[in-house]
Length: 195
Image (cartoon, rainbow, N blue to C red; front, side):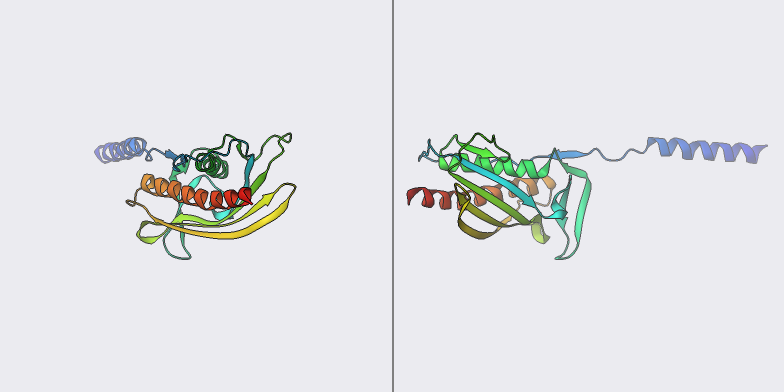
């Protein structure tokens, strides 16, 4: 009888211990616009930003880190809040609006009634944190003038070092990388508008 009691107590303890374990809470992140407002305004400019196409490995909820050049980590407990591609598009559009001093910058999709002056289409090939907290944004982008006249095709490769190895530091550095891409594309839009 006593050995059976010990076994029951042991099983009860294991069951209670298993119930007490909780997985860590999930954290959710968003990118944010980091570009500073310009003193120059282009109040009559209508610019469409997008579509922004993501490499397949980025089109997910989990935040991605790169262990090596060929091995990725997908973190189940650190995720993007909402659609990652839409967040990138909205942040890039806000950065461009600030840099260009225009209220007429629209993230994709925009109303069909808009008669845009320019459109920036972006293909993001890489956007993650690698070893030593190095953020890499590798994007090919095209600038169009209405109606679908291709003005430029460029590739921007941006590296920014995060302040630490936390996910928050990674997301802040990724936001800064998007601001850099905004500066580069805004310069192309300004040059086209001045010609």
